[in-house]
Amino acid sequence: MTDSPAPRTGGQVLIDALKIHGVDTVFCVPGESYLAALDALAGAGNQIRTITCRQEGGAAYMAEAYGKLTGKPGVVMVTRGPGACNASVGVHTGFQDSTPMLVLIGQVARDTEYREAFQEIDYHTFYAPLCKWVAQVESARRLPELVSQAFHRACSGRTGPVALSLPEDMLTETVTVADTRAYQRVQPGVEQGAMDRVRTLLAAAQRPLVIAGGGGWSQAACADLRRFVEANNLPTGAAFRNQDRLDNHHANYIGPFGVGASPAIGKLIGEADLVIAIGARLGEATTQGYTLLTPPCARQKLVHVHPDPSEPGRVYQADVPICASVECFLREAAAMTPVDHGGWGEWSSRARAAYLDDLEPTPGLPGDLDMAAVMAHLRACLPANAILTTDAGNFSTWMHRFYQYQSFPSQLGPTNGSMGYGVPAAITARLVHPDRPVVGFVGDGGMLMTGQEIATAVHHNIDPVILVINNNMYGTIRMHQERDYPDHVHATSLSNPDFATWAQSFGAHGECVTRTEEFAPAFERALNAGKVAVIELRIDPDVISTRTTLSAVRERALRG
Ligand SMILES: Cc1ncc(C[n+]2csc(CCOP(=O)(O)OP(=O)(O)O)c2C)c(N)n1
Ligand SMILES: [Mg+2]
Image 1 (tube, rainbow, N blue to C red):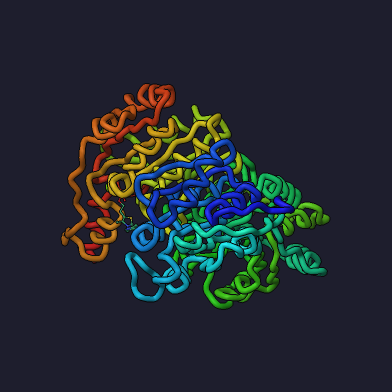
Image 2 (spheres, rainbow, N blue to C red; image 1 turned 30 degrees about the vertical axis):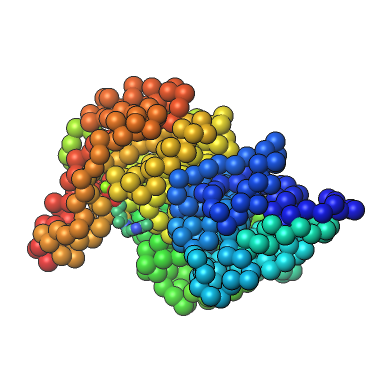
């Protein structure tokens, strides 16, 4: 903090503020609109590393993954108009995933605003539904205040992305201004009496069930979740792509909700008489299109804990709505006197048994490369702290169903189902945790959305392993097409490069696997390649998910 400040450019004030708020990494694609900030960033090299990316969508996904991994805002810097447009996909992902992010956008000079100047966009309007807050910094003198406010807003309550628009001439302006202190996270605590109401409902229940997920988690919150569900013997499921909140080997873990979930967990929630949702929004994917719980008044009693006061009660009227951060709620839940849970011992073990049954692969799926065997190998050989990232697509059902997450954070996925996430997230995971194995999963469709960020990994010596599950199609959409318009295939087939040689041309390690027995040695070589590695897994295109084939989907649809 500068007490008697010297004159600085806006760019310098901005980067000094980032340092004060603990930023150690910035993901960017450069633009002439924010050269002064880049110049200041160059001088901050010993405190802030700059990761130069190849497309702003990839850069924003990387920053989003940073937010998920660290709980601190991931920072992405992009240029005006086109840069901000490209970045928006990662900002939307951050919004739906409640991930703290700071988006810094170069903007046209102040004296040309509102003329539709070169690449000018009004970010208040454009980013409004994607961000918690958008501000344009009209004077360099206000940078310390507005950057501090941005960090505060990104990290308080329901965490999420915020954006600052930075006019080019504001960044070059020289000002004398004092810095602020570092931001502090402000979390809503649990209202007096709320835990008594939770305990009363729980004591009266016969078949309670917990759903854990959403933003604002930490290792401490995960440890408290474990204490709470253990002490009360509560079956605990994971919200969509939030499978790393409770060790999947724990006797109370009953599997994931969302895409690829087992029919058994759907039945269980149908039988439950009390649902305790901790941190999860209870969104469309987790609730299977709002069918597992019916809005606005679910049949089950509902305790809904969420850090945004407008959430418990928005879609579902909770019996006990609680506005609290998951950390605050779970601290109290872990300390709560356990209820007598003798009445639901059988319920709890039945729920766990259903999860363990679902780990058994579905028999009869065709092809020489068995993805269930690939997952069994990864489960056996990866350590508890390995991080798996995923793109969106049907291939991800293999990880959802068969991988067992054991530590937090170990799963990074876009709950908004945004393609292109898997590779950038894997790069960030390995950058933040160079000591932990990182495996990114992506389909052939998603790979060509942001796979060029392999060049970023090569450039910055970041070496995750990427598995490309290739079925030569936008398989998810093909599945829906066969279900709704059987035999009317349109716009879902793909022609792909040879992914191994494509990866090699970037300077990466590349291999192709077509048979089950080839996978283990190829994976070992990839882990030890000393550089980013891409393994293409050519699967039988008929295998459309962990449970069924395309031909079965089509035949069922044709039969009506
Ligand atoms: C950015 C984006 N564009 C389009 C979609 C719609 N979409 C969802 S899954 C999917 C196909 C994914 O194909 P691929 O990556 O090959 O995985 P597969 O389903 O074949 O396993 C598409 C196009 C999306 N979710 N995100
Ligand atoms: Mg595909």
